[in-house]
Amino acid sequence: MSKVTLLDRVISYLAEAGVGDRSLRQIAAGAGTSHRMLIYHFGSRDALLVEVVRAVEERQRVALASLRSRTPREMALEFWHRLADPSLAPYERLFFELYGAALAGQESVAPVLDGIVTSWLADESLFAGLPLSHARMALAFTRGALLDLLATGDREGVDAAVLAFVDLLLGPPEEP
Image 1 (spheres, rainbow, N blue to C red):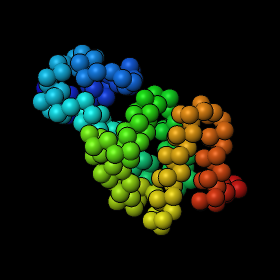
Image 2 (image 1 turned 135 degrees about the horizontal axis):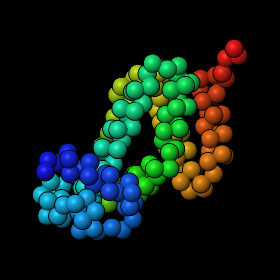
Image 3 (image 1 turned 135 degrees about the vertical axis):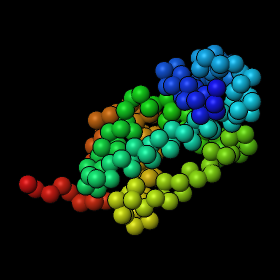
């Protein structure tokens, strides 16, 4: 089985089961492979989880890129709707867990920081031509809104905050 196929199976399994404190053996069994195969391809549980985060982040960048034909406002709101989908919550919790561990100096997950911001900012069209400082602000706000949603579960309140942020960044919607 290829590394890409294996990673896709792990991602699918973790989407259904969540990550939590699952061991590498448990993740392997859930993905229909052996822990030895995961070690061969990824080296360790932490390295595998870093690859899961990177792959999910890349999928999100591709999803955002697919919205380029829309207005910046439509693009921002549709992307938020996709990110706030409850099915992505396990990945988002993993993202913040690994992000925090890397910032705290846990060397085994430090690679998650590589490109954590720059990979999003590299493609200017992802942020509808916003100046770099505004794109960085939008990325930071989006991550903060996701953290708020995960922590509080207040979908209505966070959605309202996202709408207010989009209004501030892009202006209110035009009247028909």
